[in-house]
Length: 148
Image 1 (tube, rainbow, N blue to C red):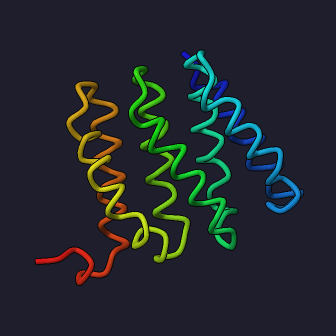
Image 2: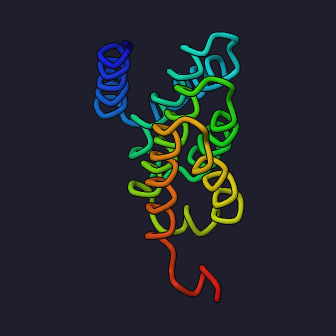
Image 3: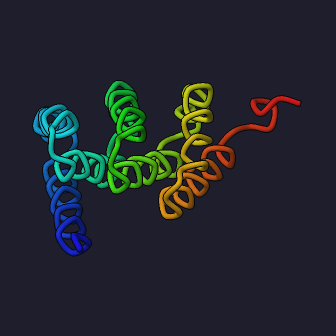
């Protein structure tokens, strides 16, 4: 089980960004996201998604960074490995909680279908986390944005 390792890694990413500030950490995080999200090893793709989850709260004033992270997470939510899909939908849900309402409004058309696909995932853990993330997304939208 890698629970302890990824929790320790998340704590380090959180500490790193909190102490240095996002502007100082942005380049290193972007490199990490690009390198590990496209790795052949599922563990590295998983690490990229969990690092995004750990740093998402710092993207508040950096819309371009939030959009880049979301695009990476959408791609990872389609991964062949269940742990990577789980981490990706988990991180997307975290984004809806941590970023301002303009983020879910901008991304709803792209994310609702992706999260609905995740809800239908054959792995219960992924499906449950996608359901939670979809609930977080819908909860952040104005009722007018949801349509009839």
